[in-house]
Length: 519
Image (tube, rainbow, N blue to C red):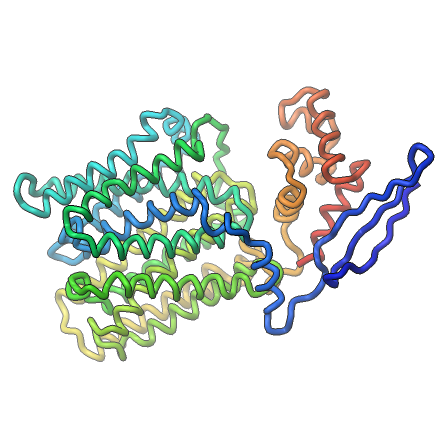
Protein backbone atom coordinates (compact mmCIF):
# COMPACT_ATOMS: atom_id res chain seq x y z
CA UNK A 1 0.00 0.00 0.00
CA UNK A 2 1.31 3.45 -0.90
CA UNK A 3 0.57 6.66 0.96
CA UNK A 4 1.81 9.88 -0.62
CA UNK A 5 1.67 13.28 1.02
CA UNK A 6 3.26 16.71 0.74
CA UNK A 7 5.24 18.69 3.29
CA UNK A 8 7.24 21.90 3.16
CA UNK A 9 11.02 21.74 3.25
CA UNK A 10 13.44 24.26 4.73
CA UNK A 11 13.71 26.19 1.46
CA UNK A 12 10.00 26.86 1.19
CA UNK A 13 9.62 24.27 -1.53
CA UNK A 14 7.66 21.02 -1.57
CA UNK A 15 9.05 17.67 -0.54
CA UNK A 16 7.14 14.65 -1.78
CA UNK A 17 7.28 11.56 0.44
CA UNK A 18 6.00 8.09 -0.29
CA UNK A 19 5.68 5.36 2.29
CA UNK A 20 5.35 1.76 1.17
CA UNK A 21 4.89 -1.44 3.08
CA UNK A 22 7.16 -4.24 1.86
CA UNK A 23 8.58 -7.39 3.44
CA UNK A 24 6.74 -6.71 6.69
CA UNK A 25 8.63 -3.46 7.30
CA UNK A 26 8.30 0.23 6.56
CA UNK A 27 10.46 1.70 3.83
CA UNK A 28 10.54 5.47 3.46
CA UNK A 29 11.24 6.74 -0.02
CA UNK A 30 11.68 10.49 -0.39
CA UNK A 31 11.73 12.40 -3.62
CA UNK A 32 12.55 16.08 -3.54
CA UNK A 33 10.49 18.11 -5.94
CA UNK A 34 11.55 21.41 -7.33
CA UNK A 35 11.04 24.51 -5.31
CA UNK A 36 7.52 25.76 -5.67
CA UNK A 37 8.33 29.18 -4.32
CA UNK A 38 7.39 31.92 -6.70
CA UNK A 39 10.09 34.33 -7.85
CA UNK A 40 10.41 37.64 -6.12
CA UNK A 41 8.63 40.54 -7.67
CA UNK A 42 11.95 42.00 -8.77
CA UNK A 43 13.14 38.71 -10.24
CA UNK A 44 15.92 38.19 -7.67
CA UNK A 45 14.61 34.75 -6.79
CA UNK A 46 15.17 33.60 -10.36
CA UNK A 47 18.73 34.92 -10.38
CA UNK A 48 19.53 33.22 -7.07
CA UNK A 49 18.08 29.89 -8.20
CA UNK A 50 20.04 29.89 -11.44
CA UNK A 51 23.27 30.97 -9.76
CA UNK A 52 22.93 28.12 -7.29
CA UNK A 53 22.48 25.66 -10.15
CA UNK A 54 25.55 26.87 -12.05
CA UNK A 55 28.84 25.23 -11.10
CA UNK A 56 32.40 26.18 -11.92
CA UNK A 57 32.41 23.48 -14.59
CA UNK A 58 29.54 25.28 -16.32
CA UNK A 59 31.53 28.47 -16.76
CA UNK A 60 35.01 27.09 -17.31
CA UNK A 61 35.54 23.66 -18.80
CA UNK A 62 36.94 22.15 -21.97
CA UNK A 63 33.81 23.06 -23.95
CA UNK A 64 34.06 26.70 -22.94
CA UNK A 65 37.75 26.83 -23.84
CA UNK A 66 37.24 25.13 -27.21
CA UNK A 67 34.39 27.40 -28.28
CA UNK A 68 36.31 30.45 -27.05
CA UNK A 69 39.32 29.50 -29.18
CA UNK A 70 37.09 29.19 -32.24
CA UNK A 71 35.47 32.58 -31.61
CA UNK A 72 38.85 34.17 -30.86
CA UNK A 73 40.17 33.04 -34.26
CA UNK A 74 37.17 34.65 -35.94
CA UNK A 75 37.61 37.90 -34.00
CA UNK A 76 41.34 38.18 -34.73
CA UNK A 77 41.03 37.26 -38.41
CA UNK A 78 37.88 39.26 -39.18
CA UNK A 79 38.24 42.33 -36.97
CA UNK A 80 41.91 43.18 -36.71
CA UNK A 81 44.84 43.89 -38.98
CA UNK A 82 47.04 41.29 -37.27
CA UNK A 83 46.57 38.80 -40.13
CA UNK A 84 45.46 40.88 -43.11
CA UNK A 85 44.85 44.57 -43.68
CA UNK A 86 41.52 44.08 -45.48
CA UNK A 87 39.21 43.27 -42.60
CA UNK A 88 36.28 45.51 -43.46
CA UNK A 89 33.89 45.09 -46.34
CA UNK A 90 33.64 48.12 -48.54
CA UNK A 91 33.25 48.64 -52.26
CA UNK A 92 36.99 48.75 -52.92
CA UNK A 93 37.68 45.65 -50.83
CA UNK A 94 34.74 43.33 -51.30
CA UNK A 95 37.40 40.64 -51.68
CA UNK A 96 38.16 41.14 -48.00
CA UNK A 97 38.53 38.40 -45.43
CA UNK A 98 35.03 39.00 -44.08
CA UNK A 99 33.34 38.91 -47.50
CA UNK A 100 34.74 35.69 -48.90
CA UNK A 101 34.89 33.96 -45.53
CA UNK A 102 31.17 34.62 -45.15
CA UNK A 103 30.51 33.06 -48.56
CA UNK A 104 32.47 29.96 -47.54
CA UNK A 105 30.53 29.70 -44.28
CA UNK A 106 27.16 30.06 -46.01
CA UNK A 107 28.05 27.28 -48.48
CA UNK A 108 28.91 24.87 -45.64
CA UNK A 109 25.81 25.80 -43.62
CA UNK A 110 23.45 25.27 -46.55
CA UNK A 111 25.11 21.96 -47.43
CA UNK A 112 24.70 20.69 -43.86
CA UNK A 113 21.07 21.86 -43.68
CA UNK A 114 20.05 20.49 -47.09
CA UNK A 115 21.90 17.15 -46.83
CA UNK A 116 22.45 16.47 -43.12
CA UNK A 117 22.79 12.70 -43.57
CA UNK A 118 25.50 13.10 -46.24
CA UNK A 119 27.28 15.77 -44.20
CA UNK A 120 27.27 13.46 -41.15
CA UNK A 121 28.79 10.61 -43.17
CA UNK A 122 31.48 12.91 -44.54
CA UNK A 123 32.39 14.22 -41.09
CA UNK A 124 32.55 10.66 -39.72
CA UNK A 125 35.87 10.28 -41.55
CA UNK A 126 38.73 11.49 -39.30
CA UNK A 127 40.76 12.91 -42.15
CA UNK A 128 37.89 15.07 -43.38
CA UNK A 129 37.07 16.25 -39.87
CA UNK A 130 40.62 17.43 -39.27
CA UNK A 131 40.77 19.03 -42.69
CA UNK A 132 38.68 21.96 -41.43
CA UNK A 133 40.94 23.26 -38.61
CA UNK A 134 44.01 22.46 -40.72
CA UNK A 135 42.60 24.50 -43.62
CA UNK A 136 41.86 27.39 -41.24
CA UNK A 137 45.42 27.34 -39.90
CA UNK A 138 46.94 27.13 -43.39
CA UNK A 139 44.68 29.91 -44.70
CA UNK A 140 45.70 32.11 -41.79
CA UNK A 141 49.34 31.75 -42.78
CA UNK A 142 48.54 32.45 -46.45
CA UNK A 143 46.60 35.61 -45.54
CA UNK A 144 49.51 36.83 -43.41
CA UNK A 145 51.88 36.27 -46.35
CA UNK A 146 49.52 38.04 -48.74
CA UNK A 147 49.48 40.97 -46.34
CA UNK A 148 53.26 41.37 -46.73
CA UNK A 149 53.01 41.33 -50.55
CA UNK A 150 56.19 39.27 -50.77
CA UNK A 151 55.01 36.05 -52.44
CA UNK A 152 51.24 35.82 -52.87
CA UNK A 153 48.80 38.39 -54.16
CA UNK A 154 45.26 38.12 -55.45
CA UNK A 155 43.43 35.83 -55.98
CA UNK A 156 45.10 34.05 -53.04
CA UNK A 157 43.46 36.36 -50.52
CA UNK A 158 39.99 35.49 -51.82
CA UNK A 159 40.79 31.76 -52.05
CA UNK A 160 42.31 31.57 -48.57
CA UNK A 161 39.45 33.56 -47.06
CA UNK A 162 36.81 31.31 -48.63
CA UNK A 163 38.57 28.15 -47.44
CA UNK A 164 39.00 29.59 -43.95
CA UNK A 165 35.31 30.49 -43.84
CA UNK A 166 34.30 26.97 -44.87
CA UNK A 167 36.47 25.53 -42.11
CA UNK A 168 34.97 27.92 -39.58
CA UNK A 169 31.49 26.85 -40.69
CA UNK A 170 32.34 23.21 -39.95
CA UNK A 171 33.60 24.10 -36.47
CA UNK A 172 30.47 26.16 -35.80
CA UNK A 173 28.30 23.16 -36.70
CA UNK A 174 30.44 20.97 -34.45
CA UNK A 175 29.96 23.31 -31.50
CA UNK A 176 26.27 23.40 -32.30
CA UNK A 177 26.23 19.62 -31.87
CA UNK A 178 27.90 20.07 -28.48
CA UNK A 179 25.69 22.87 -27.15
CA UNK A 180 22.35 21.33 -28.11
CA UNK A 181 23.03 18.44 -25.71
CA UNK A 182 23.25 20.80 -22.73
CA UNK A 183 20.52 22.17 -20.50
CA UNK A 184 19.27 25.72 -20.93
CA UNK A 185 21.27 27.05 -17.99
CA UNK A 186 24.42 25.29 -19.18
CA UNK A 187 24.04 26.68 -22.70
CA UNK A 188 23.63 30.19 -21.32
CA UNK A 189 26.54 29.93 -18.89
CA UNK A 190 28.96 28.25 -21.28
CA UNK A 191 28.15 30.47 -24.25
CA UNK A 192 28.51 33.66 -22.21
CA UNK A 193 31.76 32.45 -20.65
CA UNK A 194 33.13 31.43 -24.07
CA UNK A 195 32.24 34.81 -25.51
CA UNK A 196 34.00 36.72 -22.73
CA UNK A 197 37.07 34.47 -22.87
CA UNK A 198 37.24 34.87 -26.66
CA UNK A 199 37.09 38.67 -26.31
CA UNK A 200 39.93 38.53 -23.79
CA UNK A 201 42.02 36.28 -26.04
CA UNK A 202 41.33 38.64 -28.93
CA UNK A 203 42.67 41.57 -26.93
CA UNK A 204 45.79 39.66 -25.89
CA UNK A 205 46.60 38.35 -29.40
CA UNK A 206 46.10 41.74 -31.05
CA UNK A 207 48.57 43.31 -28.60
CA UNK A 208 51.33 40.85 -29.57
CA UNK A 209 53.97 41.65 -32.20
CA UNK A 210 52.84 40.66 -35.69
CA UNK A 211 54.90 37.47 -35.92
CA UNK A 212 53.72 36.20 -32.55
CA UNK A 213 50.13 37.23 -33.30
CA UNK A 214 50.16 35.26 -36.55
CA UNK A 215 51.64 32.20 -34.82
CA UNK A 216 49.05 32.32 -32.03
CA UNK A 217 46.20 32.74 -34.52
CA UNK A 218 47.42 29.74 -36.53
CA UNK A 219 47.30 27.59 -33.37
CA UNK A 220 43.79 28.65 -32.32
CA UNK A 221 41.78 26.49 -34.80
CA UNK A 222 44.12 23.52 -34.35
CA UNK A 223 43.65 23.47 -30.58
CA UNK A 224 39.91 24.08 -30.95
CA UNK A 225 39.65 21.20 -33.44
CA UNK A 226 41.57 18.93 -31.07
CA UNK A 227 39.14 19.68 -28.26
CA UNK A 228 36.10 19.29 -30.50
CA UNK A 229 37.02 16.15 -32.41
CA UNK A 230 39.50 14.37 -30.13
CA UNK A 231 38.47 15.27 -26.59
CA UNK A 232 34.70 15.59 -27.07
CA UNK A 233 34.46 13.01 -29.88
CA UNK A 234 32.06 14.98 -32.07
CA UNK A 235 31.05 13.12 -35.26
CA UNK A 236 33.23 10.10 -34.52
CA UNK A 237 30.25 7.82 -35.07
CA UNK A 238 27.80 7.87 -37.94
CA UNK A 239 24.36 8.61 -36.51
CA UNK A 240 21.09 8.47 -38.35
CA UNK A 241 20.01 12.02 -39.15
CA UNK A 242 16.39 12.82 -39.88
CA UNK A 243 15.68 15.35 -42.57
CA UNK A 244 13.15 17.72 -41.06
CA UNK A 245 11.19 20.32 -42.95
CA UNK A 246 10.68 23.99 -42.24
CA UNK A 247 7.22 24.22 -40.72
CA UNK A 248 5.44 26.50 -38.32
CA UNK A 249 5.71 23.79 -35.67
CA UNK A 250 8.99 22.81 -34.12
CA UNK A 251 11.19 25.02 -36.24
CA UNK A 252 9.68 28.06 -37.92
CA UNK A 253 11.15 29.70 -40.97
CA UNK A 254 9.95 32.99 -39.53
CA UNK A 255 12.35 32.59 -36.63
CA UNK A 256 15.20 31.93 -39.06
CA UNK A 257 14.33 34.97 -41.15
CA UNK A 258 14.10 37.02 -37.97
CA UNK A 259 17.70 36.22 -37.07
CA UNK A 260 18.76 37.18 -40.58
CA UNK A 261 16.86 40.47 -40.44
CA UNK A 262 18.40 41.32 -37.06
CA UNK A 263 21.86 40.64 -38.49
CA UNK A 264 21.06 42.72 -41.58
CA UNK A 265 19.88 45.73 -39.59
CA UNK A 266 22.73 45.47 -37.08
CA UNK A 267 25.47 45.21 -39.68
CA UNK A 268 23.99 48.09 -41.70
CA UNK A 269 23.98 50.34 -38.65
CA UNK A 270 27.48 49.15 -37.76
CA UNK A 271 28.75 50.15 -41.19
CA UNK A 272 27.54 53.69 -40.52
CA UNK A 273 28.73 53.86 -36.90
CA UNK A 274 32.05 52.08 -37.04
CA UNK A 275 35.02 53.55 -38.84
CA UNK A 276 37.19 50.45 -38.69
CA UNK A 277 40.51 51.79 -39.95
CA UNK A 278 41.30 54.23 -37.13
CA UNK A 279 40.22 52.08 -34.20
CA UNK A 280 41.87 48.90 -35.50
CA UNK A 281 45.19 50.71 -35.38
CA UNK A 282 44.36 52.16 -31.97
CA UNK A 283 45.53 50.26 -28.91
CA UNK A 284 42.16 50.74 -27.19
CA UNK A 285 40.21 48.76 -29.82
CA UNK A 286 40.60 45.27 -28.24
CA UNK A 287 39.46 46.58 -24.88
CA UNK A 288 36.48 48.27 -26.48
CA UNK A 289 35.59 44.86 -27.92
CA UNK A 290 35.89 43.28 -24.46
CA UNK A 291 33.70 46.04 -23.00
CA UNK A 292 31.08 45.43 -25.70
CA UNK A 293 31.19 41.68 -24.97
CA UNK A 294 30.50 42.34 -21.28
CA UNK A 295 27.56 44.59 -22.14
CA UNK A 296 26.17 41.99 -24.56
CA UNK A 297 26.36 39.21 -21.96
CA UNK A 298 24.40 41.40 -19.57
CA UNK A 299 21.78 42.21 -22.22
CA UNK A 300 21.19 38.53 -23.05
CA UNK A 301 21.72 36.81 -19.70
CA UNK A 302 19.94 39.39 -17.52
CA UNK A 303 16.42 38.87 -18.91
CA UNK A 304 17.10 35.20 -19.60
CA UNK A 305 17.87 34.40 -15.95
CA UNK A 306 15.38 36.80 -14.38
CA UNK A 307 12.70 34.16 -13.80
CA UNK A 308 12.70 30.65 -12.36
CA UNK A 309 12.15 29.20 -15.84
CA UNK A 310 14.62 30.48 -18.41
CA UNK A 311 12.85 33.29 -20.23
CA UNK A 312 14.24 33.11 -23.77
CA UNK A 313 11.42 35.29 -25.05
CA UNK A 314 12.45 38.11 -22.70
CA UNK A 315 16.06 37.86 -23.93
CA UNK A 316 14.89 38.18 -27.53
CA UNK A 317 12.64 41.15 -26.73
CA UNK A 318 15.42 42.91 -24.83
CA UNK A 319 17.79 42.40 -27.74
CA UNK A 320 15.26 43.91 -30.14
CA UNK A 321 14.77 46.89 -27.81
CA UNK A 322 18.53 47.48 -27.41
CA UNK A 323 19.14 47.28 -31.14
CA UNK A 324 16.28 49.68 -31.80
CA UNK A 325 17.70 52.10 -29.24
CA UNK A 326 21.15 51.92 -30.85
CA UNK A 327 19.65 52.59 -34.27
CA UNK A 328 18.00 55.75 -32.92
CA UNK A 329 21.41 56.94 -31.73
CA UNK A 330 22.98 56.64 -35.20
CA UNK A 331 22.23 60.27 -36.21
CA UNK A 332 23.51 61.54 -32.84
CA UNK A 333 26.83 59.65 -32.65
CA UNK A 334 29.73 60.91 -34.76
CA UNK A 335 31.28 58.17 -36.90
CA UNK A 336 34.63 57.12 -35.44
CA UNK A 337 33.89 58.51 -31.96
CA UNK A 338 34.24 56.39 -28.85
CA UNK A 339 30.47 56.16 -28.39
CA UNK A 340 29.91 55.16 -32.01
CA UNK A 341 32.64 52.51 -31.83
CA UNK A 342 31.20 50.91 -28.70
CA UNK A 343 27.65 50.96 -30.07
CA UNK A 344 28.79 49.44 -33.36
CA UNK A 345 30.62 46.59 -31.67
CA UNK A 346 27.70 45.95 -29.29
CA UNK A 347 25.37 45.37 -32.27
CA UNK A 348 27.68 42.59 -33.45
CA UNK A 349 28.26 40.99 -30.05
CA UNK A 350 24.65 40.95 -28.90
CA UNK A 351 23.27 39.44 -32.12
CA UNK A 352 26.01 36.79 -32.27
CA UNK A 353 25.41 35.72 -28.67
CA UNK A 354 21.64 35.68 -29.19
CA UNK A 355 21.95 33.37 -32.21
CA UNK A 356 23.97 30.82 -30.23
CA UNK A 357 21.47 30.75 -27.37
CA UNK A 358 18.32 30.67 -29.53
CA UNK A 359 19.53 27.95 -31.92
CA UNK A 360 20.74 25.73 -29.07
CA UNK A 361 17.39 26.21 -27.34
CA UNK A 362 15.31 25.31 -30.39
CA UNK A 363 17.45 22.29 -31.26
CA UNK A 364 17.41 20.78 -27.77
CA UNK A 365 13.78 21.61 -27.05
CA UNK A 366 12.32 19.91 -30.11
CA UNK A 367 14.92 17.20 -30.71
CA UNK A 368 15.91 18.52 -34.14
CA UNK A 369 19.09 17.71 -36.00
CA UNK A 370 21.73 20.31 -35.02
CA UNK A 371 23.08 20.17 -38.57
CA UNK A 372 19.73 21.33 -39.89
CA UNK A 373 18.93 23.90 -37.20
CA UNK A 374 22.37 25.47 -36.92
CA UNK A 375 22.91 25.20 -40.66
CA UNK A 376 19.76 27.15 -41.55
CA UNK A 377 20.09 29.56 -38.63
CA UNK A 378 23.74 30.45 -39.17
CA UNK A 379 23.28 30.69 -42.94
CA UNK A 380 20.49 33.22 -42.41
CA UNK A 381 22.51 35.19 -39.87
CA UNK A 382 25.70 35.22 -41.96
CA UNK A 383 23.86 36.20 -45.14
CA UNK A 384 22.08 39.02 -43.32
CA UNK A 385 25.31 40.30 -41.80
CA UNK A 386 27.10 40.21 -45.17
CA UNK A 387 24.26 41.97 -46.97
CA UNK A 388 23.94 44.69 -44.34
CA UNK A 389 27.69 45.33 -44.29
CA UNK A 390 27.92 45.60 -48.06
CA UNK A 391 24.85 47.86 -48.38
CA UNK A 392 26.24 50.09 -45.64
CA UNK A 393 29.58 50.19 -47.43
CA UNK A 394 27.85 51.26 -50.65
CA UNK A 395 26.13 54.10 -48.84
CA UNK A 396 29.29 55.36 -47.12
CA UNK A 397 31.39 55.03 -50.29
CA UNK A 398 29.16 56.89 -52.74
CA UNK A 399 27.08 59.26 -50.61
CA UNK A 400 28.01 62.09 -48.30
CA UNK A 401 27.18 61.29 -44.70
CA UNK A 402 24.70 64.02 -43.77
CA UNK A 403 22.19 64.24 -40.90
CA UNK A 404 19.37 63.61 -43.36
CA UNK A 405 21.09 60.48 -44.67
CA UNK A 406 21.66 59.20 -41.14
CA UNK A 407 18.02 59.86 -40.29
CA UNK A 408 16.94 57.90 -43.36
CA UNK A 409 19.29 55.05 -42.41
CA UNK A 410 17.84 55.05 -38.90
CA UNK A 411 14.34 54.81 -40.33
CA UNK A 412 15.36 51.82 -42.46
CA UNK A 413 16.93 50.01 -39.48
CA UNK A 414 13.96 50.65 -37.21
CA UNK A 415 11.56 49.45 -39.91
CA UNK A 416 13.59 46.26 -40.28
CA UNK A 417 13.61 45.62 -36.56
CA UNK A 418 9.84 46.19 -36.29
CA UNK A 419 9.26 43.96 -39.30
CA UNK A 420 11.25 41.17 -37.62
CA UNK A 421 9.41 41.57 -34.34
CA UNK A 422 5.86 42.22 -35.51
CA UNK A 423 5.59 39.98 -38.57
CA UNK A 424 8.36 37.35 -38.47
CA UNK A 425 9.00 36.55 -34.81
CA UNK A 426 5.56 37.29 -33.37
CA UNK A 427 4.37 36.58 -29.84
CA UNK A 428 2.79 33.34 -31.04
CA UNK A 429 6.02 32.22 -32.70
CA UNK A 430 8.05 33.10 -29.62
CA UNK A 431 5.67 31.10 -27.43
CA UNK A 432 5.86 28.13 -29.76
CA UNK A 433 9.61 28.10 -30.32
CA UNK A 434 11.20 29.55 -27.22
CA UNK A 435 8.66 29.28 -24.44
CA UNK A 436 9.21 31.03 -21.13
CA UNK A 437 6.89 32.15 -18.36
CA UNK A 438 6.15 35.45 -20.04
CA UNK A 439 4.50 33.88 -23.07
CA UNK A 440 3.18 30.49 -22.04
CA UNK A 441 2.26 29.06 -18.61
CA UNK A 442 2.56 25.54 -19.95
CA UNK A 443 5.92 24.38 -21.19
CA UNK A 444 6.26 22.07 -24.22
CA UNK A 445 6.19 18.32 -23.65
CA UNK A 446 9.72 17.89 -25.00
CA UNK A 447 11.09 20.42 -22.52
CA UNK A 448 9.47 18.66 -19.57
CA UNK A 449 10.95 15.33 -20.67
CA UNK A 450 14.42 16.85 -21.02
CA UNK A 451 14.11 18.39 -17.57
CA UNK A 452 13.16 15.08 -15.96
CA UNK A 453 15.94 13.24 -17.83
CA UNK A 454 18.51 15.78 -16.66
CA UNK A 455 17.27 15.77 -13.06
CA UNK A 456 17.36 11.97 -12.69
CA UNK A 457 20.44 11.29 -14.83
CA UNK A 458 18.77 9.21 -17.53
CA UNK A 459 20.66 7.84 -20.49
CA UNK A 460 19.67 8.80 -24.03
CA UNK A 461 17.88 5.49 -24.57
CA UNK A 462 16.07 5.71 -21.24
CA UNK A 463 14.95 9.23 -22.13
CA UNK A 464 13.59 8.00 -25.48
CA UNK A 465 11.65 5.19 -23.79
CA UNK A 466 10.33 7.57 -21.11
CA UNK A 467 8.98 9.92 -23.80
CA UNK A 468 7.27 7.06 -25.63
CA UNK A 469 5.75 5.76 -22.39
CA UNK A 470 4.47 9.26 -21.58
CA UNK A 471 2.89 9.36 -25.04
CA UNK A 472 1.00 6.14 -24.25
CA UNK A 473 3.04 3.74 -26.39
CA UNK A 474 2.87 0.06 -25.49
CA UNK A 475 5.93 -2.15 -25.14
CA UNK A 476 5.49 -3.74 -28.61
CA UNK A 477 5.10 -0.29 -30.14
CA UNK A 478 8.23 0.98 -28.35
CA UNK A 479 10.14 -2.09 -29.54
CA UNK A 480 9.00 -1.41 -33.10
CA UNK A 481 9.79 2.32 -33.10
CA UNK A 482 13.26 1.97 -31.56
CA UNK A 483 14.20 -1.31 -33.24
CA UNK A 484 14.88 -3.12 -29.95
CA UNK A 485 14.06 -6.56 -28.65
CA UNK A 486 11.38 -7.08 -26.00
CA UNK A 487 14.01 -8.03 -23.43
CA UNK A 488 16.01 -4.86 -24.09
CA UNK A 489 12.92 -2.67 -23.73
CA UNK A 490 11.94 -4.37 -20.47
CA UNK A 491 15.48 -3.97 -19.16
CA UNK A 492 15.47 -0.26 -19.93
CA UNK A 493 12.02 0.10 -18.34
CA UNK A 494 13.29 -1.60 -15.19
CA UNK A 495 16.22 0.82 -14.96
CA UNK A 496 13.87 3.70 -15.70
CA UNK A 497 11.47 2.74 -12.90
CA UNK A 498 14.38 2.47 -10.47
CA UNK A 499 15.90 5.84 -11.36
CA UNK A 500 12.57 7.68 -11.33
CA UNK A 501 11.36 5.90 -8.19
CA UNK A 502 8.10 4.85 -9.87
CA UNK A 503 6.30 1.55 -10.21
CA UNK A 504 4.14 1.79 -13.30
CA UNK A 505 3.61 3.77 -16.49
CA UNK A 506 1.00 6.07 -15.01
CA UNK A 507 3.46 7.32 -12.40
CA UNK A 508 5.90 8.20 -15.21
CA UNK A 509 3.16 10.23 -16.88
CA UNK A 510 2.29 11.91 -13.57
CA UNK A 511 5.94 12.78 -12.97
CA UNK A 512 6.24 14.51 -16.34
CA UNK A 513 2.87 16.20 -15.94
CA UNK A 514 4.12 17.78 -12.71
CA UNK A 515 6.45 19.88 -14.83
CA UNK A 516 3.48 21.76 -16.30
CA UNK A 517 3.05 23.94 -13.23
CA UNK A 518 6.70 24.27 -12.19
CA UNK A 519 7.22 27.24 -14.50
